[in-house]
Length: 226
Image (cartoon, rainbow, N blue to C red; front, side, top):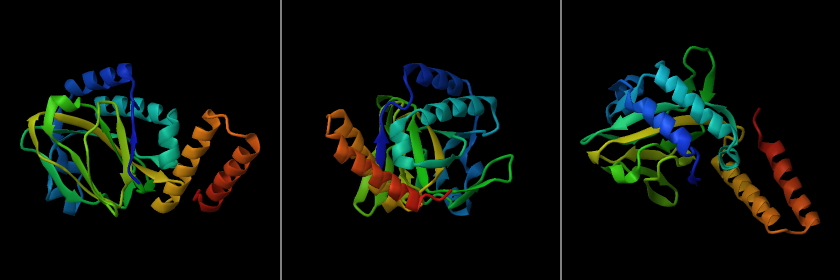
């Protein structure tokens, strides 16, 4: 399931993160790539232990904690600390699949990576190219969103970033260990939760809503991996 989450960052948070990253020092993005990814990764990345990365990452995590659409789509158990990358003209990231397991820096804690996420920070008109291309069972999808918008998609998806030909594409990215590891199960729960919220807003009858909500929670109870 590929889900766009508009407006994860409001204008003030987006401006604060953009200001931090504008003053940051960038390094070769291959520093954090696995063996396969390093061969096709040509971008810049913010050092994960830098003050700018930590501060910007904390801002994003706080926004995620309060966003019902993200919670509904990802059903997060753990969120990997956000990272940040920059693509200048000629830079790209070839087709790859994200690592299945990642260790949280500075700890012994490992996460199973179920969901990948990209947060667009640059305005789309500020650069040409740089589309995130995601392949799934329904075909190939090109994603280039407004600044502050997030896209989440299965970490098992083959994906790439098209070459940037003008300007600079700056984005945040992170991964999620979901309470429901199966993408099909997460999709069903997301669709059901969306329907419940829409029916509630439309003033649907309470008994039907109650039964639907009970089904949602009982499915989550059956599938949740805690």
